[in-house]
Amino acid sequence: MTISRWVLLWAIVGVVCGLFAACYWLVLEWITHSLEVFTGTSLLIVMPLAGLFIGLVIHFLGNSGEIGLLVDNIHLRGGRLDTREHLQ
Image (cartoon, rainbow, N blue to C red; front, top):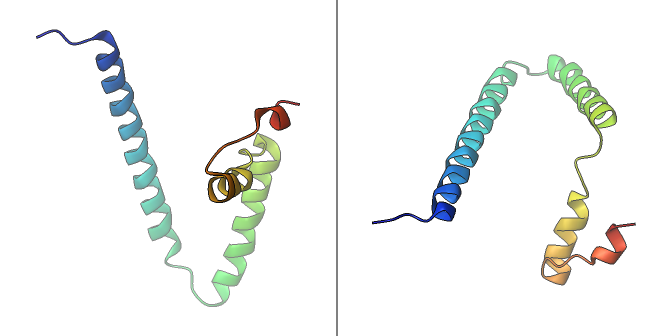
């Protein structure tokens, strides 16, 4: 049985993406459990600091893309983007 080179590449991409997703899930779970200790007044301090941190990350690393535009296009236009509008 011969396996096409494309099938092998797709399998490798699938494994790499699966590992990335698993790492993302583990980090998300760790952060969620780490933040569970904050309640009451301490939560009022931590949440604005977290927002400030996220704002600084977006400011210095750049916008992650036009996620809102993508979601709107999926809902309103069946996911189609007009490339002429976004390449300028």
